Length: 308
Image 1 (cartoon, one colour):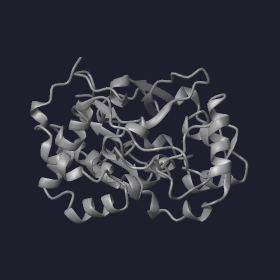
Image 2 (tube, rainbow, N blue to C red):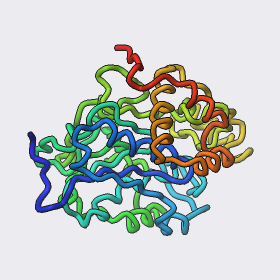
Image 3 (tube, helix red, strand yellow):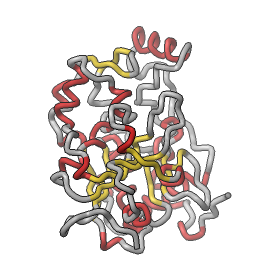
Image 4 (cartoon, rainbow, N blue to C red):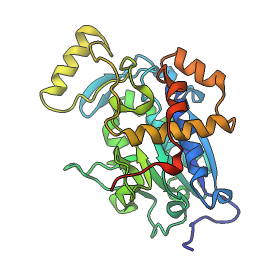
């Protein structure tokens, strides 16, 4: 088996980043990591709640730069958790190995294969860049924490509002030494694609996240794309952050809906998610209001046919 790169008794650790809006997804994600691993006893899983770090809320309503566009930091945005992905090295005492994932990332196969792989001396491994500017997908990162002692999230977060860094450059790892970043197969962060090759599926298209169908859109769309970005900025300026965005649509791949709700159903039956949590999430429009009905109707996960 490949070396984990950890020293001493430090166990590999998976961190699921989230906020209250995506907390059900985060619990399901954590469950999937253990459920689908034959080595579940060899690693730990922690859900990181963005609201537990008050330095984020102190900047609510203040402006920062994102891809050269001025934005307002909103605590109630669907993705206010994103910068917690840089916390694991600090939480690990800058020791050992950590895997950090978004709350809409779910293990389909054994995550230990990734946790235990040879990082070949790199500090970070993630999905390779598909953008001309070299931006990486940091939504799933394998981290050698000892090599990331320069990561200080609170300090870096404050720099956003002091004009000393751009959110896009930070989140896309463009501020890191390129030589310290390695890449893994796309299947470990498979964007909205569920096939026999998928290792971890990422429901990255927010409008079709399976647990949000029918609810009003509560995220802020990307604004750096020419023409569309200008339209989105004008919409936000004159009508409000989430005005005129419509509702979440049903996911076009029924198997991805079945996969999420199959995991949710199992986690619920095992007592990992309670009725109180589900009912509160529905009442606050964090998950679709027919979640119980969907759970009842989904086929068992072991019967799910995943197309190639």
